[in-house]
Length: 232
Image (cartoon, rainbow, N blue to C red; front, side):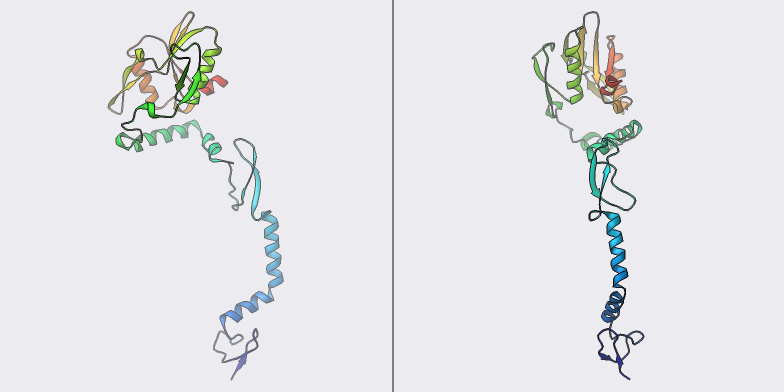
């Protein structure tokens, strides 16, 4: 006996499903048409929740600036940029990352292997107190800021950048290396050398090994300066 499809109203042999429809296409389109109002209502509510096409405006938890990003359920983006994300890391986490990278980049695996440090990026600074050219290059913005502090310190008579006079050896991981501090500083009544580091670098094996190597050879005071200490 022939049956009539409830969707397209054509006769069919009734072998598909329960026999109400002639095909899968008619079965699905009939269900969609019957529940169209309910489907439209759910879509509308979802769009209202998601706002502008699923976009949401939130505050970066590091710099506190507003930014717009895609909504990802209950896991919205927390930072406005990779820069803010990388800055909002605890000192202990930075130390763990540093130690891990030392293993990954050991020896020939290090992208700086066989290259002179002079090939690294540099920052230009100017100082009349520099025992050399008044305009010269340092290796980081931290060092540039330290030069600014020396310029503003009336007690400083002069300084030397990367003084070869205080070059020494230190041992790290069973390998002997050569080290010279960042600055030699001569003040009115004292002289000392300074190593400039980020706060998270203070307790790394490399920093401590350099310090031990230096104080084992020289008696001049050895200081480590960080930008964070300056803020305190």
